[in-house]
Image (cartoon, rainbow, N blue to C red; front, side):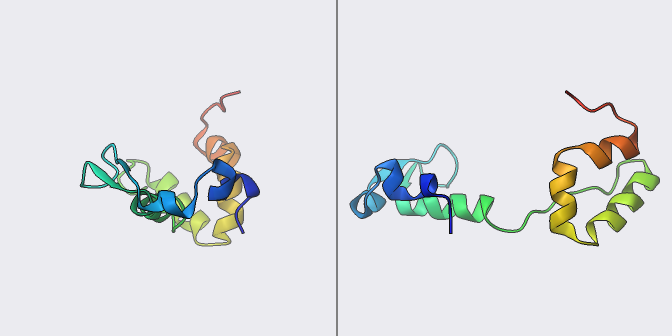
Length: 97
């Protein structure tokens, strides 16, 4: 269940608004699309699986570490990695902030 502030009704959007057309700003191929199509595309982008590329870094040690790292308990580790702690420490990169 999404947080209350993400419910369409919390944003003042009604079922009738879902058929209204809005600019897509490059999100879809058409210049304009119904709001429901725009929302579906955003869900595809932000609510599905996450992928990333890490091969070709010219650092086989980091590539191997990432390969091992993401293979075990992905959700928990990605939360920690998002904070930058482990990758920064491993790559010897100073953490911002």
